[in-house]
Length: 87
Image 1 (cartoon, rainbow, N blue to C red):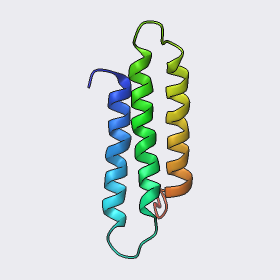
Image 2 (tube, rainbow, N blue to C red):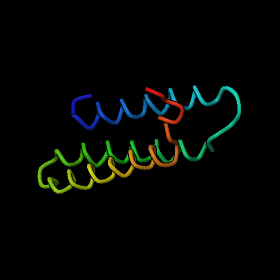
Image 3 (cartoon, one colour):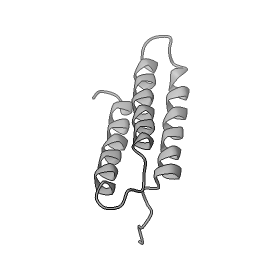
């Protein structure tokens, strides 16, 4: 847990776990593979981001940020974690 990618992907993954546990109670709304896609996106983002800190791999920051953004977009579009939130 030494880079910003470690922390941000861990926070997103923890949110996925909470969402999964919350939605596992009651009627099924989501497919299990949706969570798998999001988890693999977090792992890929973390891997690319950590590799970007190695000498000569600076361009991987762009790939890691793009994959992280795509993962967050997938979560918000497919899993819709804010459905039912009336603030």
